[in-house]
Every structure is written in structure tokens, then in C-alpha cells.
Image (cartoon, rainbow, N blue to C red):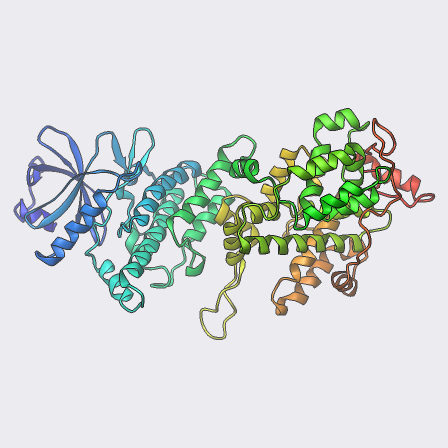
Length: 623
């Protein structure tokens, strides 16, 4: 190699002859790419270092001085996941950076053909991302990120080496030349483009760690990167076969990191880090861990803020009569946060055990009011965070839109429900199927916007071709949060104390799942709410996709609910404004009276058959 010519003759040395770079003995080549190389070297006392050098030495003068300035600026950064440089210098025209290798090995040396388990690979890359994000914030990029540049110690801590060593490479010069065409400062444009290239390179590193083989069978990450759009036409997707299974959220994260559509990729290190850390939290916790993403936020800002106009509702609550619940329930149902808080309050094991003579859940605000009383409702109302909580104006607008969309779905479900099903139960189950969306929109407004963006179709690659497809909501949530939106809603509902029967009902039916005839009232309620939510989602699609999406809803659920396209369109255009709390008034009695007794879910159908001949009640009415 050219570096050898400075200290060794051109003829091949004997196997036992040591090779030197100045005073350092060259032990072995750790890695090389088009632009950089790294060597394991030993000092005279045997202490091992890693030297990182450019493959082509910068010419003496301005180029060499720029290299030294960039690398010294990078070496001054201090972060737990950036390898500290022990020396920056040059030998016979070859500039280098030296790093301590005591107790460390490169990531390339750690990976075998079996790859690494998902959590281990994600943890190492997340650590590297922490250091990389810190460097990017300081205006420093890597420029040639390789597995040989990632050092891992005996404790499993990863550090990134080689920052700015490739700053005089042809790629760096090309990025700088491209940025000259941007108005408003070429340096910022160059740094942003180089930072995005770093993130894409680290996505390829993660791909290789999981697959056990480099992407596109190219060990040089830079060469593989050059084959992806917009430079090439290759597609990199994580293979399904492998020694270690890859969880779906992690697969979505890795595939987004190397997506063929540039608009879908991670634009900065922190967004990729956020997704990996979200998945690692959910993966490591015994309970599924999704609440780990929310615990601090729930304590600080509650599950949802009180809806706009809460003050006026509080005044109305203060004037309510104590002997009837329907009018009070209608006031409470205007506020999703207060409705959910009442259900949480009365569905804890302690409350059910003390006040409900039966094991079933409470799924109506009317019954919750009967159990807590007006004073209890007022107390819960005062615990809610005022609208819009910590959201800014744009976030508040989006949350309000989502709330109205959820209420609309609830009304549509009421309009479609079979006879004898309690409208309020149907309404609340439909709302609860959107709990994950509501929580994400409130607590992760920026992430919710990113999920929405990833779901949108892109421009066609060529004229006349169909638009580039967007991601599914599930895939986009995995790629942004590292967790499924529905799983977040279920985790919050489980945290509230809702029992498994209710959790099953508020699991929205996946769009890819087949619809079967319901085996119980709980199944019917779940399918009805899923139908209404899918129908409302269909109305949000582009006009050309609107009608086909509604037809798919009818094909899926039409036989169950005697539904045709015209009937569904009518329910969507005019879902009705009837009172939600529709059944006969219940006195505010407690201590296991008929007003507060909750029927078990399994008994609803039999009870409905007995009641239907003589009462206007039906399945769900006793909840």
C-alpha cells in the first residue's frame, strides 16, 4: 500500500519482519474504504493504538492545513460515545489520528456471519448515534462512517472514531461543490448534506449487524451508499431469513433508515436515535414497556387535557341536579378527557370490588356517575390539565381535529349499531379504539406529524408512473416511535385498570385481518367500532381513493351489520345528533343497587334475549 512505501521497500517483506509507521509498529489493517483506512499499531512499550488516516494524503499547503483544522476541531469534542483522540499529527506527509485501543475492539471484529441479536445491535448503534448527534450539533461530521470506526469496550460501550478524517475526500469536495448552488450559505448546506449521509451510512451499518452480512455485499459502507438513490438504483431491505429473529418495529426502523425514497429516510441522527431508544425501552421492560415512553409525560401532563370549554362545563356541573344522571352524562361526554378519567376511576380493582356487585367492567359514563356521585365528577374534573396542556397552537389545532374525528367515528358507530346495543357503550368503545392516536398526538405532537408525513404518497419517480406509496400507520409508528400506536393506547388502558375483556374490545381490527362472525357481544362491539373508525379514516384519503376505500369497508363488514355503500355514506354524511346517554334515567344510588350493578360481558347476549321482548334495553345496557 502507498502508506508502506514511506517506511518499507516495494518488495514483499519477510513474514517476521516488523513494519513501522514512524515509531509505531504496524500490527494489522483494521479496515479500509475508498477514503480512509485504520491500522492497529503498537508503541514501543507494547501499548496498542488505532491509527485512522486518509487513503490519499492531502497535498501539502492549504489542503493539509484544512485537514488538521477540521480534525483538531473534532478531537476537542467530549462525549461518552465519541472516542477521544490521543494524538493528531503527520508522518512523512501522511496525517493521522490516534485512538487508545486498550480493552477495545472494532465493531467489525465483533460481528460474525451470524450477525448480532436485535437488542444488542440496536443498543450499540444507539450509543454511536448519541455521539454522532452531539458531533452534528457542533457542526462536525464523520464523512466515512464504517464498522471499523466504531470501537466497543469490554463493558459493551460503543464509541465513534475518525470524525472529519475524510474531510478532504472527493465525496466531501462534491458535497461542498453542490452546496455552492444553495443560497443562504454553502457551509450550512454542506454540513446538513454530510450529516444526512452519516445517518444513512449508520443505517447501513445497522443493517449489516442484523443481517450478518454487509448490505449489497459491499464491505465499504461508502461504496454501498453510492449505489442507493439518488446516486444509484439499488434497494436495501432487511432479509427475512437470519440466525437472529428481528422484531417488526426494529425491521421497520432499519428499512426506513435505508429506504429507497429519500423523503422517507431519517434526516438527522436524533430522529433515528429516538426510534431506536423507543423500541429498546419497549423491548426491555417486562410489561411490554410501551408505558416507559410515556411515564414521565403522563405524570406531568395527564393522559389528555380537558377539552376546550371546560370552564363552562364545570359551571354546568355545579348546577346539575343530584337525582338523575343522563343530563350530567351528556355534559361529561362532551369532554373526552373527563369521560376517560371517569372510566379509569371506576374500573380500578379497588373501586369495582367495593362498589360493584359483579365482575364486569363499567363502560358507560352514566354508571360511573352513579358510582362516584356529582361531587366525585367535579373532583375529577379539577384534576385535568387545562386545554391545551403543553401543546403549542399548531399542536392544539391538530389535537382538536383528531378529537372531532374520533367523536364523529363514535356517532357513526351509533348510527350503524344493531338493535338493543347501548349507544353510549358503542360510542365509548369507538373512542377508546383511538386512545393510542390521541395520546401520541398529545404527548408526541412532532412524532405524530412525522408519522402522518411518512404515510403520505410521494411523487412518481417518472412521468406516467403511479405515486410512490407511503407507509402504513403501523410501519410509520414503528419507524418514528419504535412502538405501535395501538399498543400505546392499550398500555394506557391497562395502566388505568381496564380488564382484559375491555382491552380486547378496544383493540382495533387490523386492516389485513379477516372479518369473522362475532362469537359474543364483545366481538360485535369491537367489530362495530372498527368499522366506524375505518369508514371515517377512508374519508380522509385523497378523493380518488375515497370511494374504493368505503367499498372495502362495506365488503369487510356489510354482512355483519346489514350494511351497504349507500347506508354507510348516509351514516358518514349525517351520523345523527341524538343524545348519547339514551336509556332511561338512573337514580344516583350506590352500594350494589341495580343502578350501579355491572353485568359481566359473557352474560350480555343471554340477558338481551330475555329483555328484548319487554324492555328497550339490550346488549351493553347493563354496563
